[in-house]
Structure formats: C-alpha cells, structure tokens
Length: 296
Image 1 (cartoon, one colour):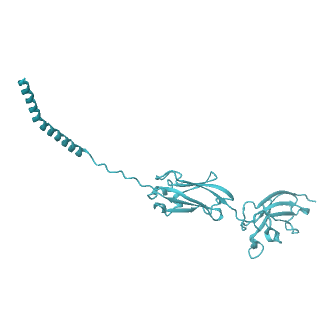
Image 2 (cartoon, rainbow, N blue to C red):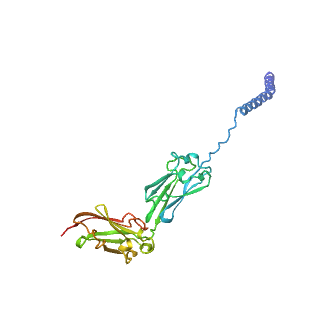
Image 3 (cartoon, rainbow, N blue to C red):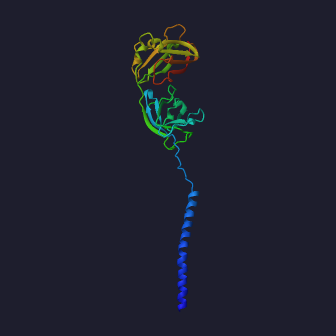
C-alpha cells in the first residue's frame, strides 16, 4: 500500500513539472501561426464605382406654328462620352407621333456644342425647324421621344430614356383658296368658281396696294397658258374676304380668242398661283376639268 502511494506521488510530481513547458509550447505555436497569417494576408483595395452619364428627355413642348421643342438633360455624375457624338455610331434621338416614327436625329446634331459633356447640363432643340410637314397639325397628338434609342451610350440608368406627352395644336385662322368649278357656258366661254374654304378672310394687300398682283389666278388649256389675272380683278367686290364665301365669273368674257375652241379640252385653273397668300392648306389650289365646246 505504501508502495502504491509512492508511485502516485511520483506521477503527480512528473506531471506538475511537465505542464508549464507544454503550455509555453502551445503559446509559442499560436504566436507563430498569427505571424504567418499576418504575412500571408493582403490588403484588398476598395472597388471604386464607375461614374456614368444619364440621358433623359426632360421636356416636350409645343411652340409657335405647332412646332415641337424637346429638351435633353444629362442627370448623371459624368459627362456624356465622345462616342455619343460620333457621326455614324453616336446616340440617336427618335420621335414618335401617335405611335408612328416621326423622324430621328443624332445627338451631335442636337448638341453640336457638346453641352451634355457637363453633368447636369441641358440642351433644347426644335424638331427639324423649317422642314415641310413636320409641324404637329391640328388636334390632339401623342408624342414620344427616346434619347439614345440605339443604346450607344453606357448610362447609370438605362430605363429612363423615354418621355411621352399629349400635345394639342390649335390651328391658326387662315384663308384657304380653292377652285370649286370650271364649266363651259354659252358661246363656249369658260366660267370659274373660286371659294375661300378657310377660317379667315383674304389679307387686305390682295385687294389694295402695290402687291395685288401677287395674289393671282392662272388658267391653262391643254397644257398651255390661257390667261391669268389678279385675284382682285376676278373678285372686285372682295367676297373672298369672308371665310366660306364663293365668287363666280366668266374667264375674260369678250376677249378675242379666249373662248374654248371646238372639241374636247383639258382645262386647269390655279388660284394663288405664286403661293403668296398664307393659307391653311397650300396643296389644294388647283382644279382640272375635261370640257367640250360643241361648235355651231
């Protein structure tokens, strides 16, 4: 029994002597591992966010003569890149009128000074000033404009390039001269009827002053000239100054050689032949008839 107690005491003595050296060894291992981790760990630099432009259509408005003015704005944090202004590959601005394409143009033509290269800048443009048939026309219309329609520019927001507006064009009151009738009357003289189909009377200069010859009526028979006269000569009492009024007269009654010759002929009359009267419709000034003069 004494022998067993001696053995246990010896073991405890040996363990108590060994424990401090084991703990110290363990601490050294942890320190060594921490040093290795510090050496092998690399600092990762924060990723910088790329600043981009952001094109929007900020406004669509109606101006004089029912033309359309649009405004394009760069609301991004960077200027529009050079590719946006490229002649062939640049950004395209597209317009739709009542869902149908109504012209497109490069951003470089809208912004030749490249104002949109400055964040926050805007540029306005009248949609094809002076171009025929690109005024809005009377009535209510849906107008949609898309900037960068061809996705030529990388933007911070690709989903805000479109703006749609409902615009109303109230037509300005203007006269509208038309030829409503040409016919053969007694002795093969020609009778012509003109009408003002517009919403305003003819201007005063057509009846008095130095420019009355500008407003003129021309007749052709079989493709050749058959006399012409100032409108005030055909309408001496000024009936056409009243919207909706008509005037009928014989073409140079009694003038030798201006009655219609025997046979079948093509007769054309053009009112406002010089296009000097500002009308609501400039393409309805002509009427052609096939007329027969039966001699004897």
